[in-house]
Amino acid sequence: MTTSKTAAQPEGRSLGGELRQQLKALLDGGQAHATFEQAVKDMPAKLQGVVPEGLPYSAWQMLEHIRLAQRDILDFSRNDDGSYRELTWPDGYWPKDPEPPNAGAWQKSVEQVREDRKAFEKLMDSVDDTNFIKPFPWGNGQNLLREALLIADHEAYHVGELVMLRRLLGAWKS
Image (cartoon, rainbow, N blue to C red; front, side):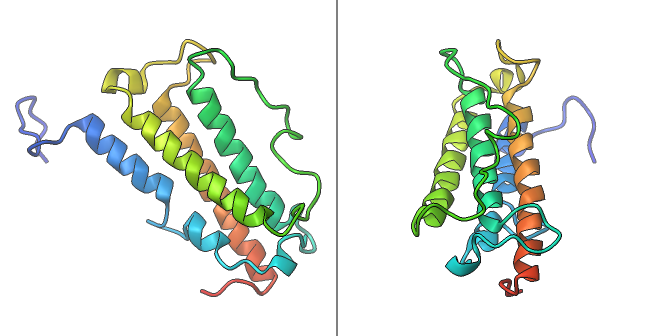
């Protein structure tokens, strides 16, 4: 590995550009584990609201938690206008009812996770390298890089739980 300050970078690539590319791959998941898309695909409607014995949440509650937390991070990260309001813990992040409110709720939540992820990736692309790591004027020193890592880490954790829950319910095809 070259460590010289004069080492050439691959043509057209920068550390910030490469970091964003790798973060997007991390947000999409699947490099070392199941993806969000795999974890939510073809979840039987009759099992979406079932809480397996010994677990605190249903698949619906986990999906909604992923959606709510990601949206909260997105809203926090694009708080230039000061409109962000912190959610209460845990009520703002976890639905109380284990069952989806209607037949279309599961798919709507999945689609919102996808849309919010795209919005976050667009936000990452909208700032230069300096502002990518510069602390926000709000919060406690967080920056966009940290929030991207937080989304990826949080989702990976809960995707693993969702896969395990589906296995316990007999609804995971590996």
